[in-house]
Length: 380
Ligand code: DAH
Image (tube, rainbow, N blue to C red; front, side):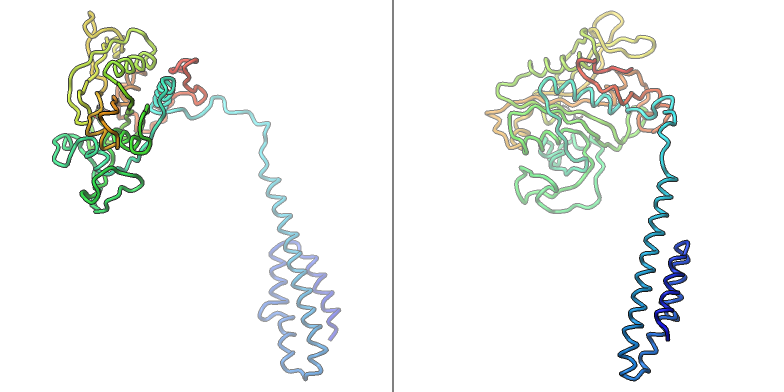
């Protein structure tokens, strides 16, 4: 048999193959189970040793040459196919841009950015904590032991399984070891971030902690998920005057007016002592609440805005701090409510409907990053 001629013919046909399917068909024809070269290989078994010695290398050589030719032809064709696809998918950069930018910043994100900017100017860092919390950080460490009635007021979403591990997932605790189990829950407020930050960073501290919180509650003014921002200052010789100044300065910057008047009322929160509820004066203008002035002024009233107070000694201890050395104040405020008051929305539920018409109306330009120099509420 003239292996050289067989080989030349095979290589010529492979070189002529115009597409990947033809290459595959040739592979089957030559090298498949029933293929012609496979057939030649099978004849080796029936040959005499002498014959095999002369024929063997020729048949194997033929198979190698054909295999190599098939591989290289396939590579050439695949390369050409890729080139063609890339050419077809090229982007025409001369197309006009859309007339108006699409997408906008949600008012909650906008307000959180504004708050971060305002508090950064006062030397506050942003701290975070997990939304899936354990009952020690969410309640116990905040001076709400298991039987505390305030726990019932939180309408907590609990997770079904009660593990009895003694270390909190993902964090240190200052809990007495082995004395409690971790019931996992969706945090009901941002206050557990106070504990986590004290344990992780010690004192002094100046932080805000914005984020999502969850309560099993739903009507026109409550949604099962909403947003809070927590503030915490720990230092030496901190007193209520610092709290009042900080809140006044923050609210003046946030509402962008100087006539913000606060009324501090004694209240109760387990994690603060004394506790203070803070009201602001407001009036109705054009059918919507506008913050400003004293609630005692004609045409004005008071509205409750946030909770705050001096950090309770038990909370400092749970945070690993010596309450005789360190004092602090804390506050917590609803971010959605701040957004509604500043930007005049009246239905909280619309915040979470994801209706693009609402977002187009109330959303903010992505390019209008809040800055103190440019005005934190720019782009309304
Ligand atoms: N955690 C409270 C709540 O969700 C709000 C709050 C009140 C936070 C007083 C504080 C505070 O830090 O001092 O209702």
